Picture 1 (cartoon, rainbow, N blue to C red):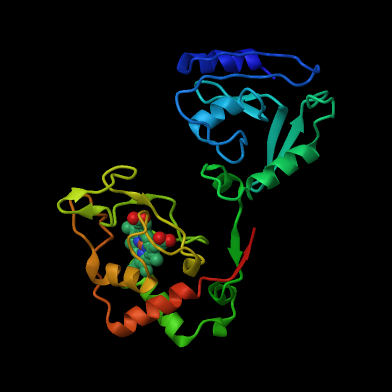
Picture 2: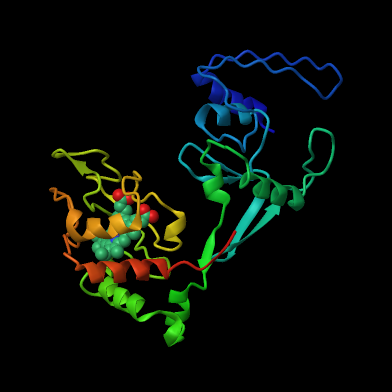
Length: 273
Ligand code: HEC
């Protein structure tokens, strides 16, 4: 551990008093003065600024960032992307825990697995380590060639999604997102932006898979149901100076709204974590 280095960083922001009382050779008291309350000493429970700063004194990372966000080896000496879903990471040999137990790949796997399941964690960590895959929806089976996987109503919905609705200009690809940011008018109210998002009220196009599990909708959860989302795209668009060119009220008929909704629901399938 590079305790000295971590402390140098910390001491610029916080007043720190360290008392290292080596009572039994392993245990030591550490007293740290802080600007705000500590949420938790569990670095996987909370990864927020202050908690992370304390954790730096006790835990080490595989790879480190420097002040310019360049990566440096730490507990990992090298890392290589084998395919889009697999990293090969080599650990520094000879590293041990404070009680002398060797640090191994199994410990890394344990840590990553643990991080995804910390109950009530307020930190943003879990969303980075959790992988959720959705697949084998009826829509997937339809595109794989099974013509009867979608009902007639859902097929009409698909046509509207591609055609009249212009939905595919943004909700494209296997995950129904172009990974881009757009102003859809959601953040516009009373002649002003309620949230500027990325810029000018633009938010990232979300996936449309597993929608029944992700209510309420939009970045601010301001639309409670999928029926209301379809209604929004039909009549509710809030015009504003930054509105995306592809967003305008599409004036769907009642039947078209039912079809679009049915199509959106056909994007749910099996989820694996
Ligand atoms: C110009 C790009 C664009 C077009 C065209 C577009 N969307 Fe979206 N869609 C977005 C963005 C961006 C959001 C997120 C907005 C936010 O968070 O405020 C969104 C959100 C949604 C959501 C909510 C998802 C969630 O989990 O919150 C649904 C459902 C949806 N769109 C369906 C559609 C349908 C149906 C159409 C066609 C009628 C359509 N979209 C057309 C960009 C677009």
